[in-house]
Amino acid sequence: MEFIDAHHHLWAPKTPELDVGYVWLKNIGGMRPFGDPTPIQRDYLLDELRGEPEGARMIGSVHLQCDPRIPDPVAETAFIQKLSDDAGFPIAIVGYADFASGSCAQHLEGHMAYPNFRGIRQIISYLPDDPAHSFVQTNLLDDLTWRSQFGLLADYGLSFDLMLYPHQMRHAAAFFADHPDIPVVLEHLGSPLNRSEAGMKLWAEGMQALAALPHVHAKLSGYAMYFRDRLDDEARMVTQRILEWFGPDRVMFGSNFPVDRLYLTYNQAFDLVREELGGDVEVQRAVFRENAARFYRLDIR
Figure 1 (cartoon, rainbow, N blue to C red):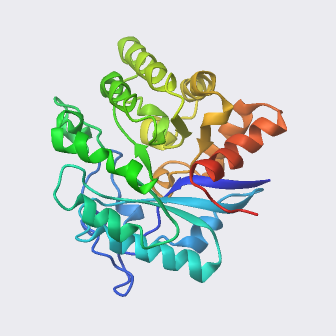
Figure 2: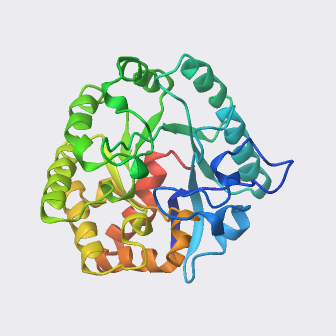
């Protein structure tokens, strides 16, 4: 089976000539919202990623920015472009720019110099009463500068990778409805952190609000961030609902490696998704390959 991994990270904090100024990767043992990162605070490069899946062949991939505190985020794009070029392996690049800052346009211009660059991820996951699980210190959806500069993505023909919590989804859907020319893809199952009855109701309502926008897609990724090593009925239900609401033409698989490697093997999440898709070859081809190739404009011929 040939597939595209639509969400992974590559990094090299231990090799000086490849270090682009990582911050959290060098803060050994510093807790993250997904747990203790110590086992992955090391070099993780393309050969290791491509060797993870068993019984399937990765034919392309999508690298997501991994540290918003890198002094020059364009350096990360240059690093991934070189890895792709040296290996002759197609890697779409989703980099970082801060839409709330004065350097946003400058960084977008810098990213655009690299042919594999496709979009921006700026995590907006914010819980006002839970700083340990917040990735940012404010709700960026309320920031007028952030909202204004988000529109620059349309000028450059770029997409946006969205990571947020369920209580932010309705607000986000209303905002993205005003930007139908900017493709958006929701990461990591919509971050179902609170799986109480009330929490899952909020998740379902927010997910359906986003799914109602035809330019919003979803990733079956980040299972370990919310289910750790327990891919049980809850994980399957979440997968089924996402496929139902977004449809198989707007869903793609991503491993979130090496982060998910803290709790899962590559094939545990891969096989769960494949099982939930059923035996329809065209549906499997769409979710594991064609949707990512189309969204990120990956040439996999």
